[in-house]
Amino acid sequence: MAFIDFTAGNVLTAVQMDTVMRQTVMVFADASARDTALSGVLAEGMHAYLSDTDVVSVYSGSVWVASGS
Image (tube, rainbow, N blue to C red):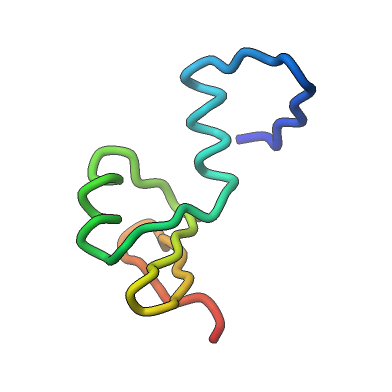
């Protein structure tokens, strides 16, 4: 998956939007909301922030792991 450099006015395809999602830190209320939203699209390297615990985690390919402190 390559980094995408967008310019104003770009129209994104579904594949490009998926790439953007994997390059950002997604924000969820809690782990349950994260797991529900991402149940069919998990990929190694995804990052998520959980508001309830104030934790950023990364998906290892099999589990979510806290990233830093």
